[in-house]
Amino acid sequence: MKRLIYVLITIIVFGIVSCSKSMSQYDAEIDRAEKIMSTNADSALSIVDAIDPSELKIDSLRAKYHFIRGYSHMSRNRSLIGDSLIRYAHDYYRGKDIVRDIRSGIVFAWYKFWVGDTHGALLMLDSLAGLPNVPDSIMVQTLRTRVLLGVSEYQGPQLIPFAKKLHKLEADSMRKIEAKYMLLTAYEYAGETDSALYLVDELIDYARNKNWGDKYFMFELERAQLLTEIGRSTESDSLVNEIFQKAGPDNGAADYLHFQYAINALNTGDTRQASRHLALADSFAVKLRGEDDTYFRSYSNLLHAIIDFKNAGRIKLTHINGLNNRQGERLNRMKASQWESERGALNQQNRALVLKAESEHKTVIILIISLVTLLVLAGASWIIIIRRQREHENEDRIEALQKMVDDYKSASATKGSEIGDFSTLRSVMLKQLGIIKMVAEAPTEQNREMLRKISSIDGEIKEGLVDWGNLFSMIDNLYSGFYKKLHDQYGDILNLKEEQIIVLMVAGFSTKEISVITGQTTSTIYVRKSSIRKKLGVPEKEDIVRFLLN
Image (cartoon, rainbow, N blue to C red; front, top):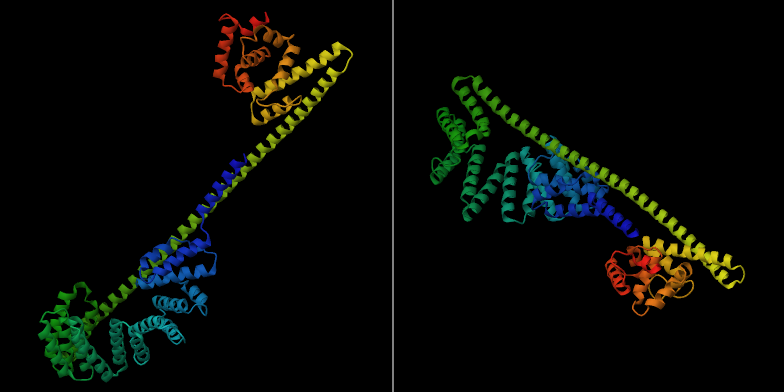
């Protein structure tokens, strides 16, 4: 019974452990996600999305969970609208872990940008970029984000120092070129065109030496635009001509090149040439960009309005409407993107609710298992109590039998009334024989042990359950010397086992009970009964005991 209880407890513990995870298991999973979030953001997201954040009971785990989730979204350029708790992670790591402090701060800045607080995002990044004793690899990541957001806001003077520092710290050659190009953009927005031209010439030379055709083409177009900015339209036209000669008349940027022609012509007062090139730019935009020409059209419509005003002295409402519609389309796309992001955030929240429901379901299962366990343990305890009561009853029975045996010894030793003595002995013997029969009917180990104790009262038992000498004497006293007569008459043809079987048959024991007392199988008992019948000459249909008694 104890073994059964141990098994049940083991099963319950295993069930509880399988239904819930320890904080160390969550920590191991989240650590695994953190190791791969920079190289495989999708896999990192799969790991953390499978975790219900409500089950994270430790602050460090909650902070790490929200940090990894937000960082992975940022790495995949996904919406961070649903990552508002990145603020919690950043507050937790501040002053504790410089790497996670800055990285979570970068994610927090992106979150601010996604919810429309670009100014707050820039202030956050300015604060991070000013921290001392930051590893270059982490500072570079901060500066990249700061410069990128600064360019999107057309910052100039404020952006230059960050772009310079980024260019200085970048170790990878491609990253260094990207940083120089963003510094060029910062100079352009700041109105420092000479510095911008100096940098674009360096980029053109680098691209030429590296045989980077596309980059070389892009940098030359950038130089043409800069020349237009400082009023050197003729030089800009010459550079555009060179680009067309090298790349062909219908190259992938023909719309932008003709657009540059149109601006240069408009700046020199040649509205006819401006109109012609603008028409060519529009046609190439439709051909090259298809439905993605919205960005180009937002500039083209403005230039059309300027040309019409110069030609007719008035502005056409169609161009203004076109410009407004293009801006409206961009706004609608931004709104659609925001709605999509919000829907994604709702899906994430729904996922969290599903995980929470699953967690509560597991809790209910654990409670049910615990209740069943208590019931099983209560039942097992009740069974143990009943068995102990039976053991006490058996012990009481043994004590009573011991008293009867003591009475038997006293009666044998006392001289006096022979009738009274015989009655006492007979009562004791019958009771002792009844105990033996009871054990044979229910041969449990406890009952067997009790019988051995009873049988060993008059002497030691070498093997088996009873003292056969004592039992034979008891049968003689109870059944008018039956065993002695049997042994005297048939002792030469019957063996001891056969005599034991006959004696027990006389005492009323069944075949199964005889097999228990003698330690033989029932099949063996049947075989021995057949042997007894042959040896004694008992007819097939006559009972052996009746034959012997007669």
